[in-house]
Image 1 (cartoon, rainbow, N blue to C red):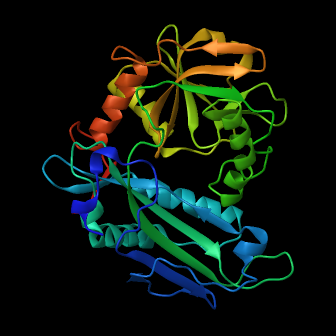
Image 2: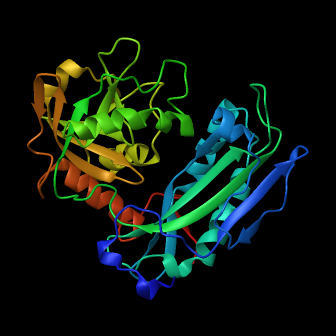
Length: 340
């Protein structure tokens, strides 16, 4: 496939096979030198640890084409660091930050034709991941692993960024205290699939998960962090050891404080205080910021009528962050990595 065959303006958030991907294998206690491959298929043993015990993790980041034609990525060092944290939690070998960033440069350069043109609203999604490829029968970590990184051009995660999402408070739990909620393990997302299908069957776009210990505090959704704007224009961000440390969320906290002069609070957010907020949004690499219109908790509906529109705080946050990502607004030092 070449770029001329892709309808950039109408891309959804789905997989399009690109030309090359990066692969490195871990065996006998060390990683090999790694290489680019045109083969998109993965061949592993039937008893591979990833198949038996879900020993796998992943990351997600994007590359953007700027107005002057360069290709850049946004804070990829944090993705590398978060993957290292996840690997430690899952007893997987560390793929160093330096090698992660080098692989990123290689795979984006090799797939330059798949980076969407500037101004289309699309981007190149980059998926690094690692899994236990070694065969294991008993419950234990694998001895062999594979790290891979592929790319796919994508459009918006939710079908219409101009339409506010309708969420429901899930009756399922996402992550236990002291569990894997704060790392990007594949198993966290596997357990959310049934809950997501239940939400869709009931007419909702996504779930809001409460803390598993007390079921009174907002944590995050199945695929993104959640943020709120109070009546006095304070950016309120739920804080918990069970929440994935979203790079987008952390960046929005900085943008709100340093660029937009907002008051920012990172704290526990009770379900019972949702009436105090006038805006709500989902944030993450895939979603960027998607406005939320309602959150339904059984027979109670919380409405956020100011979430959408040019005067909303979420819109200001979105425009500022995407302006930084596309290099139209000056970025803090170290936030932008130029690849081409």
